[in-house]
Image (cartoon, rainbow, N blue to C red; front, top):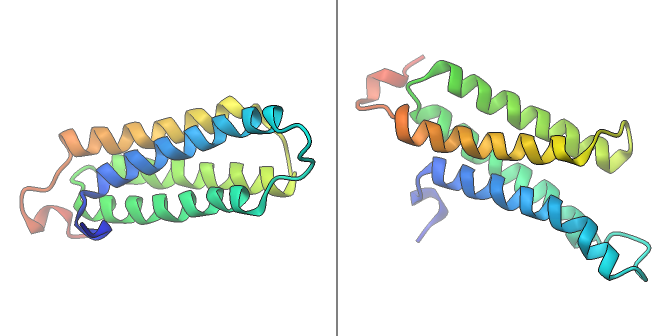
Length: 128
């Protein structure tokens, strides 16, 4: 099955949830592996992989949504998540981790809400 044939809201909810699990697991990984002083590059790269995949899902979802508010909120929360992850990477500012978790879960929730209530029934509902 190709990734482009899966419903974008399913992709978005999955990627957002996986991102939250990844963020939640990171501290525990390093507690159990205390001899590691540096985060492995592949583990840090997952942040950006999830971010890119979730942007793809947000873009595809926004093409099929009938609710302008949901479309806007998807991009807003994706942007907040991107800022939080980039800030954490470059240590620009520090906010509690739960804000990142909450942002990712909100993004997943928006995808689920959109799939249930905001689908276009014809091609004309999404024309800008």
